[in-house]
Image 1 (spheres, rainbow, N blue to C red):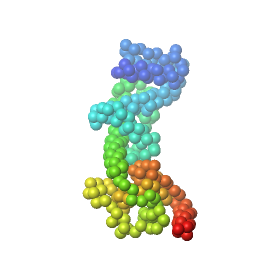
Image 2 (cartoon, rainbow, N blue to C red):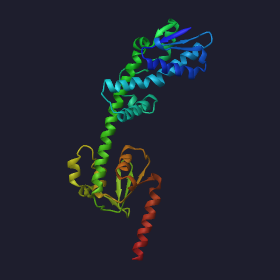
Image 3 (cartoon, rainbow, N blue to C red):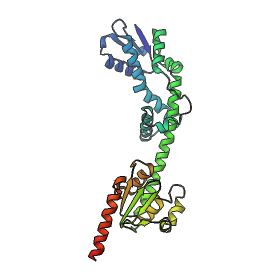
Image 4 (cartoon, rainbow, N blue to C red):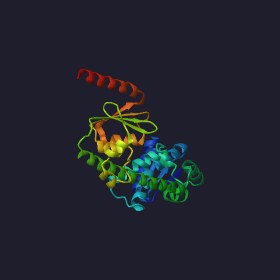
Length: 287
């Protein structure tokens, strides 16, 4: 027989329900509600199954509780919508989908071994307190979660600032009259601008086109080599040729200009340029 004692009535009920769902042995798992105890009859239930269920309870149920508690108590994020946005970032980091953020964690670089802590507590104690287990065995894990929360909050704030920046530039764009119908952009080692006849627009000409108010109002965020000329020209259509559609600057241009942007294959540039040249030649001959 083994038993786990909880301080919280909600936690003991959740663990009891979780254990019953995992093990499917309802008659061998007892809930003593008035004492907040879950008791398992080991002679009928595999201890390894109990330990695995306990592990899943920690990382699937309690982990979110601890993360939200850190958000509220240490960083004062009370709004559920904000919490959810940050939680989604944390989940992506914990799942290994955001290596760019994971590498920023300087402390506790290795994730503590929760299974090892569980093995130890079940070997040493027939009866133990979940809250004591948390305090003495899982403290390194909680510290790790605090690190993940910290970098995820920073990322959330940066994303909010980015969205505000994008919306400000969309508002600026909405007030601009297009100076060209079509613009072609080639992303290579540098960005090259072409007009609708596929004539290259030289750097000096682009600089003369830039609206100075744009650089004055947004000196840090607006790239004078790409974003500023694009916003100043405000073309109706932008054909963007790139090897990497997920490049940050490409995504920023897409986010600002939205449906005006058509991403084209880098290899398709030659065909498009030839087609435009033939169309221009036909128009001139027709004239």
